[in-house]
Length: 315
Image (cartoon, rainbow, N blue to C red; front, side):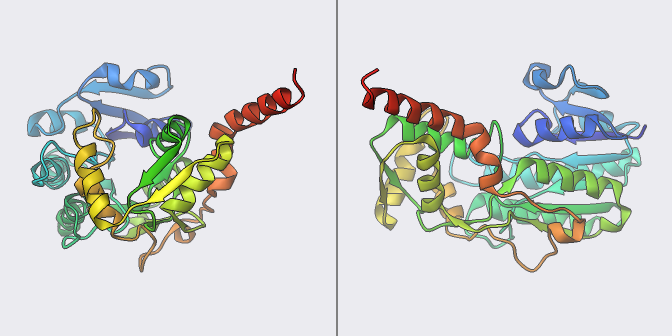
């Protein structure tokens, strides 16, 4: 069985990818800084966990030894300071280190998961460094590189619908920055399928694919839909530019930094498919929000409606 190294395999997308690969002809080696971070993967067949600092050239090269391919899922949405250094390290510098490690170990096949709207001149550090990382990989013409650019990814365990659901349960009103921001949310299982298709099909080498779901949504529409699934009525307050910036600055002091100035800058760029080929070119039919999300959020709404009926009947 061929062996693929997965960087970032202990995260949300990585967990779904490892589970999908476990049922494929590929053996999987997940590189992670702490083995405990990948605890959910321990029992998967044909999946090994290797502790490694992927930013260390020697450790990364050791992790790629014996592999036929590597998938890079690593990305960050926030950094400690709003100066771009954290993003450059996680995206651009790692891409450079990865190319060198592939050359040192003879690994030619590389699948990079980037982001829709990534561009070297994008307004946010996140999108800009993702675009610069793509440039680094495209310049490595001695490697067989495929770049996949998903919109916001959703599915069980996500930090998108689940985060808004948590906020909607707690707050009677939700001030919303970037309410008109546009997305093509894409199901995590479909992104995992695209990665496997890229690994299996040499014809995808040298190509970039935009991965978006079948529908375009605004952020306001997504929040309204989530509230409906939960069975709650909430006042959604779209914020203007100044108040959006204030909200972003204040949220940077909240533990976990749920929203930041750089996130706000990213919201200014539509996360929708562009000129690159997409799921059609990979022979994959993407699933919609309505086909997936109710299964992991809707059950709560059903219970809430049942409780309301009981109260109405005075039971």
